Length: 247
Image (tube, rainbow, N blue to C red; front, side, top):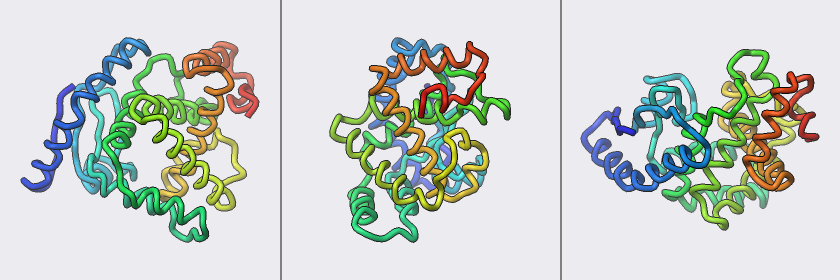
């Protein structure tokens, strides 16, 4: 997978090249893992390493600076950018749990967490996911793919301690934001999610991840959960996926 750089200064180029070089060996190992363990045959041809503004305003209007299609992954590798984005979830939140979340994010963003974001995007290319591209299908299961790829990326790149810490922070945030964004089925995850600001966007992502993480514990593995999802698809999707899993 090639590295392309969409940068605005020589300094930014130097910084992003250094990060890309540092992450590359583990990223290449992950690509082998996707091929060997998940049967991935088609991957994007390049990672476009770029800044937050370029990713979210120039190359796309997607507000989160990490996304993928069949041609390339666009990714901002700046830890400070992700720190700022995640801290924005806390706007208007107070109390001890909010301060715990704030302290967690203010401690910085490690290479493992950067790689987990890239791992999320690349796991979208697992062909075994049911097709959620058309409008009707998106209403009945896109949350599952988003939660599953978040799980796969984290499980590969994070240590057990890091994985548990990230899950705890996600759980705290979903509890803190429940009064604002809760009361909706998981199937509401869709295009409109990206119109709700970072708190609303990540509320949907973290809730989906936590649902998948619970399913993995129940079924005994991520592949077993995906196999059940394929069963729902083959059965004709006669009920919402959330109901199929008994969530």
